[in-house]
Image (cartoon, rainbow, N blue to C red; front, side, top):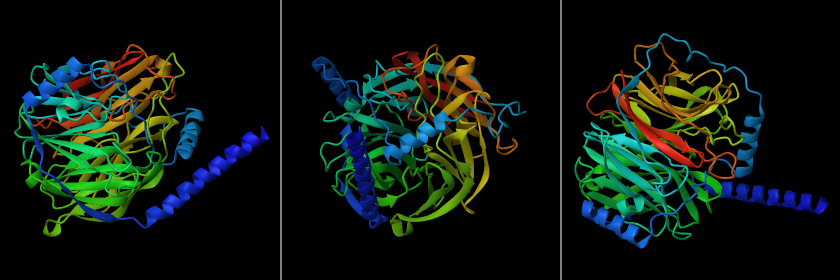
Length: 516
């Protein structure tokens, strides 16, 4: 026993030493900037995509079940200790109960509720990473490893293909997809990353629709994001846009294990949207979990935010384009103290659901001096979404508050979007073991005229009939994100997509049209 314990201590020391040495090395690389050239896009027609899908089906080479591991922004030992400690604490009343019994009218479900893709149809990967966006006539849902396009007026599925067929890439599995509709240019943007092909090569794929019709052709770019060829692993990419560019951020890990830093690249729309060769500006050495915005106006400044896993300070990065050269400076915003959330409990099982590490899981909304965001933190020893409206001109919090289904619920995996009037919509996942409620898809929101700091408990889009226990892991993989987007024709209408449970071993998804 003594030898085993000694070996364990040596292993811990070795890991700590590696992390320490690596951190010292990273310090020398902070705010590193690189220019990377990317060749012109491949134009991929609907016929190309359908032909690839048919060929994969005929050959029996569709993507197989893949577990997408969660990589926290702190080392795994520290992460496990923090999560275990949070989950072990006794549940009590939340510190902020303003979300319950308040005279605020939440949005309601409107005309459309769509049964989205499920785990079997999507190829078996988990978690689903449900994401999507609404455009003129369509809603696009993206998941690990699928693209599904719906007519938003009827809810009818009009196209369903694997990410592999869509991007024309089969060497490694594709995952962590995102979708955004650029209403400034009427283009769809769909992204996904691939597992590394080697220690020095990993690709981030970007698809830009040729027109506003997602059933038309797409320009496909593949970007090698391992720009320093250092056995780096690019993970959890997030997608944002401003008037000038698309912005992608991600976390970089040494050998896929040790957290290094955040990385961002900027791609100018002027060439990207024409399928031409491009030059990407990369910024390395940023804070982990840095998140880009969806910018709704013609602002000359774009704001990114990065939350640590605990604390009271959010790092803000200001992106500008002097002489068309992307430039970045940092500052900080003080927020109410928070810490990492416990995992979410389910009724009738000891299997909990993964609630992540206090990161912002989706793009912010930026308009004028307001930047809206939400993340999951600990409140009353339960996972609870906390939202913010940041004032980007003063680096202060205009308002913040928590929201949840009930006093005894477990709530997480939240996303937020706002319109140009300051009206807000949110979606999130919720369970309530004491009430026997399995995972729900919930939604809510607030009008700009409502009292500050309050989002009511809202309404449910779907309540699962059972718990989820796909694997022997505990917690079970969930999320890792959801999405809410404002309708292009009605700013008081939004569309949400989130994860639900179809059976104990099968995740599903639901898409809903909500509004005032």
